Image (cartoon, rainbow over all chains, first blue to last red; front, top):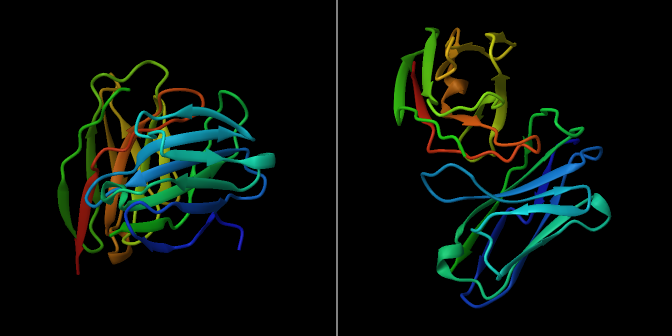
Length: 116
Length: 110
């Protein structure tokens, strides 16, 4: 399977706990994106990596959220001290792009987080 | 970011053409128009994109108004598998940070 994979697919946690999600992009893709999607809404941009460098973060990404992409391969998104408002689908996407060129983003199936 | 406006929902009969409109009156000269769709319980998937000229691919056609303030995604023969939420989005930089709106939920009636 050469698509974008995300683990776990579902996560249920209690308020105040920390959670970590993993995204494995398509192997040669140099760009990786994280989005959050709540019910009935479109995906909202959270952050973006070019190789291992995190180049942009949305204001939605509070200080409880941190994302890493060590060695420019897989990425992790950690949420500390989860709140009920963090319940959402977390989507990862990757693309292969030289600077300034357009390339489609390939999305993973998402990780659904439920905070009780 | 330039915004897009789409109808919340549309219906189509199976095997008939579907025209999904999108307004983007504040589009800038370098913005590409992208369409993605999201099938139930899946991540979004790319459909088509364009800049100024109309575009065709195996999935759909994209018709772009001459002033670029609107565009239309055309599915030539809707199938039940085309039932999804369709997002019209504009990029806001070469790194393709995109802003998804609510999209248009397309229902295909057998």
